[in-house]
Image 1 (tube, rainbow, N blue to C red):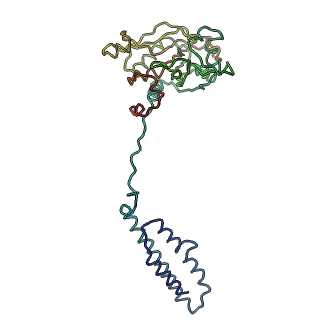
Image 2 (tube, protein in one colour):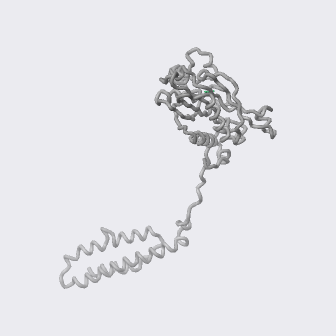
Image 3 (cartoon, rainbow, N blue to C red):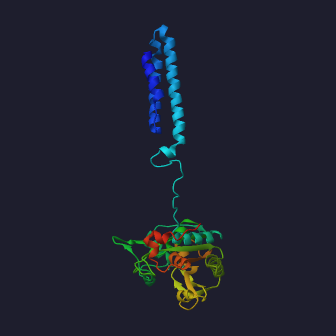
Length: 339
Ligand code: DAH
């Protein structure tokens, strides 16, 4: 028996390896729960009394030899990883991971959210697959209303009541149905229209809707809010409101921002006028308030809606709207920003 232990001591003493995994296997074999040492300690009981001393000394030597082997080899291997590892120094920091940039649509959307949140607007969202009521009827566009043709709609073939929302104005309706005034909310999201795809238009794009309902909200409040917004987003506060028509607002207007005519691009973008149209707006039609359960005698409000894609093209000088949905990394990685 003592001979066997002696042999194990020699083996442990001469053990060597380049690999931490092998060293661990060695440790388990000798010092692990089911290793040699535990086995030998268990056998100690059955050793005849006169041999107990020598046996005890032998296993203690084996134990200290194995322990020392593990600790010296471990220290050596860890210090020499560069030399010994086939793949180089495993402890070096890895290659920096290329963190992506945000999509230009998200950048502009976040900027818009930030600007409106500073004056107390929250963010709300609604479904992209909508029903007729929220996209049209509640917004003062009953069936067969000619203004429905202003937006070419994608309907779900099997159910003409279900469609892909053509504008984020549908979220106004949902918000008013579920929240009592005062309301100050903006609703960003994707919208769909059955339009030919070109450099200037797409069959899906993004809008932000704004809605403000309270007692005594006036057209002057609307104008002031929009002026603040254009100043913050474009750095330009000269705006004009042109009379227009939307079924859900009365009166309605289109908002132009004065861009200037300083460069050739300004001329091109503004078709020589210096003015750029950026959104539609108006005072929420009393019928819409009624449809959404709000008393128009007590409350009034304004709404506005703008396209994010066009603003992104404008702010980042992109000349083709299709680039926004092609997911070409060479295009996308040009937009790195903190927003
Ligand atoms: N929904 C309109 C569109 O898609 C935009 C719009 C115009 C929204 C006037 C409004 C508004 O809230 O008041 O063309």
